[in-house]
Image (cartoon, rainbow, N blue to C red; front, top):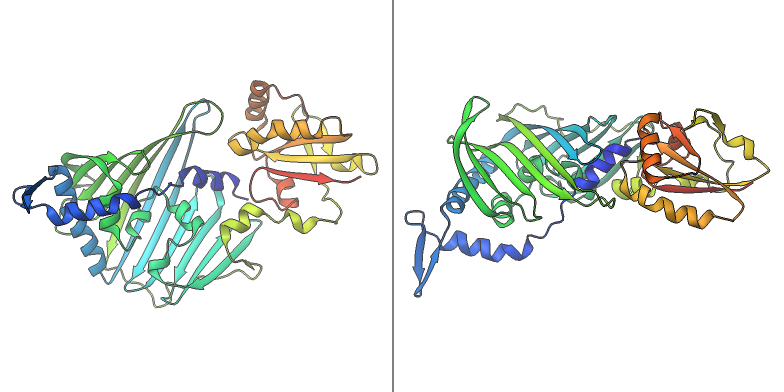
Length: 394
C-alpha cells in the first residue's frame, strides 16, 4: 500500500520560505560586476562574495542550456539515511523526459514500496498523474504542461531532494540563488569521470547541502547531497541524509507518444492524489459488515475479529513504529477507550515481530498488538495512510 513510501516523502517535504529573499537575490544579480566583484551605484558600494558570484554565473548558464535543449532525459538515483535510535535507509529513482516547450513524462519509484510508483506527464495541454500500487490505482487530470509539473503536493514532495525538483522549475536560476546562504566554493574535482564545480551552502529551510555541477561548456547538475535535522515528535535526535546522482541524455530521441500514460482499467479518477491517499477509502465501509481477517498477536497467538461478533464493540488502531503521528496519537486513543466497554487492538502495519516487540517494550504498552506484516488488514479496510482508527459495532 506504500505506507513507508508516503512517510519518506512526508519528512522530505520542504517548507518553502524563500520568497522574502527574492528581491535581495535580484539586486545582487543586477549590481555585481563580474570583473571586480563590486560596483558603485549612486555612491553606494556593494560587495559580492566571490563564491556567490561564481555560482550565479554557472547557474545562469545551466538554466539557459536546459531551456535551449529541444529534448533531454535525466535520471536521478537517490539514497537516504535516517539517523536516530532506529537507523533506517532506503532509496528512490526518478526519471524525467522533456520535449520543449511544454511536454514531459516523469516516473518516480521507491525501494521501500516496490509495488508503488507515481507517473506524471503532459502533452502540453493536459497534465495526467497516476499513482499505482498492488491494491490501488488512482489518477487525476488537469490543464497544464511543463510549467505545471510541480503544481501538485504529491509530485513536489515525491521529488524533494532528487535534484529533479530543482531542474523542473521554470525559474531555476532565480530559485537557486534566492534559496542559498553561506555559499562556499569548494573548487573543482573529478566526479563520474569528469570535472565538476563543487559548492556547499545552507538551504532556505536550514538544511546543509553540497552539490556538483559539470565544469564544461554545458553545465548540468551531477550530484546533490542534503542533511537536515528532523523533529519526529519522539524527543530523539534525528537527521536525514540524502545523496542523489544524476545521469543525463541531452537531445534524447523521444517517441511521438512519450508523454502518454497508460491508465489501468480499474483506476479511479480523483481530483487530488495526495488528498485522496491521506483521506483513505475506509469511509466506504461505513454501515457494511467489517472485513474479516486472520492474523497473529505479538505474543504469537492467533487473532480473528469474528470472535467478538455480537459480544463487543471493537476499536482497531492502525499504526507503525516509524510513523511518528501514529505512535504519538496512541496514548490519546487509549485514554478515550478506557472504561468504555470496548475491546482495543493496535494493528502494526508492515513490520516484523522483533521490531514491534522492541518498540512496545520501550513504550511500555500493555494493550494487545496485532501484527499485519503483509498489510492484509490494511488492504481489507482500505487504509492508505497512518494513523487510522476504526470503530466497529457488535
